[in-house]
Image 1 (spheres, rainbow, N blue to C red):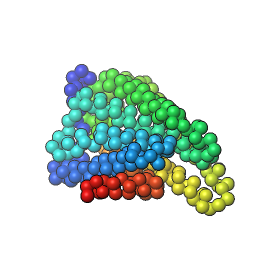
Image 2 (cartoon, rainbow, N blue to C red):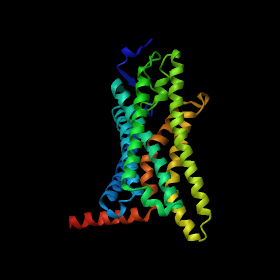
Image 3 (cartoon, one colour):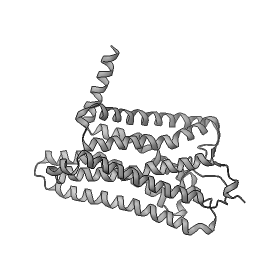
Length: 311
């Protein structure tokens, strides 16, 4: 029998049993991590350096890239270190910190995606009021609200999770400290508190989901009324990258956290965790840059200026 006071570390799930395969996973995730750093770093730099991109849409995109950098840096470096050194341990405080920062960044990202849907709604459905409704002060306030909500949510969940008595060992069946896996280690008499945590998460996620869907229903109604095909194409091209990012984020996250216990297998849980925690930060910059000519132009100017300075 374990108790919370006797646990000083947790054991994470290894990607493979053989060290050679562990090393292969290390190089694979190192490539993904470097791609995420490069892609998000370029978007942040391009938006910060090009004054043409100092608009509400790109301000929110900059915040999204910052959150992507933070979320992937919370989980992947520790997993890569464990794979490289063929170890599985993470300290109790390190696990708590990982839970707090990952939940904080993921919640803030979902909240920000909701705000970005509202931004697209105003830009397409009420373009004449765009500058009034989404001024610089309003954008800062909305971004601050997203970060503050995420902070409160992560504090609540982290405090509740690590105050639960743990009596089912210290083996976390995931490559990072994930709340559902830690809850499996808690005692059976804490079911009410587990339900409370789940209810809060569902309320926050469902509220954001409803607002995103409502925004795009209203956008679709307006877009279908646009007489010119070119106008409809332009409107859809503005929304498509955001829709792809939202769909990837929501589908993988909902399946990982809301799937029935009968579908919980270590390999499936691991695959879903990689999909919702690792892949979005790596592919988001690609999705936004491919479909966005202004980002492409800003990146070209940035690269050309760097080359000219070196010459």
